[in-house]
Image 1 (cartoon, rainbow, N blue to C red):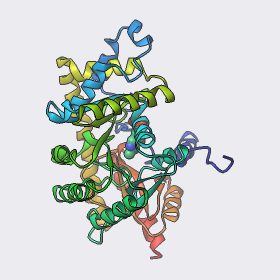
Image 2 (cartoon, protein in one colour):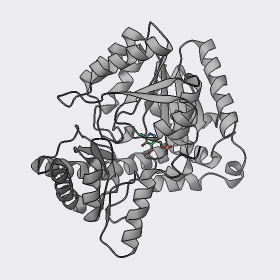
Image 3 (tube, protein in one colour):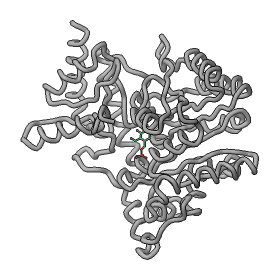
Length: 401
Ligand SMILES: Cc1ncc(COP(=O)(O)O)c(C=O)c1O
């Protein structure tokens, strides 16, 4: 216990950046994953504010059902899968953000001592959650030599995980992966699902799609859903849904874990197990938040207002992505395919050194293994030129040039 880090390193970096900014320095803080307007404010869609205003205090103050408000869960499933057969075969529970959904997936689909499989670039709380619940993570190489998704490495890791523990839990965060910004293309989705179909027959395989950033994906990025119908025959499909990013409800802790199961009896067993996990973890979640989200997702006038708000958020981010791509390729930075989303990573042989050099110039990014992560969501468009110039200096320094 005494060896556990007390604070998330990203929150510490953020605190340092804020301290210097408060002391009057011109700081560009590209560490924290929230969508900030170009003039420095947290962007909260007006439709979300309207939705909260419609929730009577007497309802939001009451306890929510253990598994979550049924109308909320139904709306979340529809938001994820639409009206098709996947929705009909889904069960869901409300969770404390996407984080809570990931927690429930790990504890319900892996035994103590077992390991989940994810890419070697991953959102570090995956490891924290696994370790805190006495599970672990193992990784496959995310990118092949050409910068595409390394299907071969994925398959090798999956086969060896199945051989070792007789089951697998795969955790994927697409579209708009954090930290790399990468989204699988059609070919890669096809390859991935074929691999799972091949091996899902030999052992129980569950696959958790962490879709925290999905609404910010480029057109076509929603194609992962088209492959699920087939995949559901050979793997347990799970989805971690979150209101944090798409509805800017970071602090409200609203999320859900969805499980797709065509067999009714099995579906009921999963529903029971997940409800048990809710009771044993937090009892029930933010009722007011669930009710407000239900309003947005089901009331036609709010749905329309939210679509417009979302469009504006996506457009804001996409403009930054475009400006970044143009500037970064001009100076020859190396980074994965980046078509949208809150983050991108730029490769560097010495990430700590790159981040240090950049912070000396007042620009904060997060050092990872072999890359630094940039939060485009909190970088104003007008600061991208400075960001890229500083990145170039930091990366060249690490390359010893
Ligand atoms: C990859 C990824 N998954 C899930 C989450 C979960 O967020 P929350 O628990 O706020 O819904 C985050 C938040 O930063 C994230 O980056």
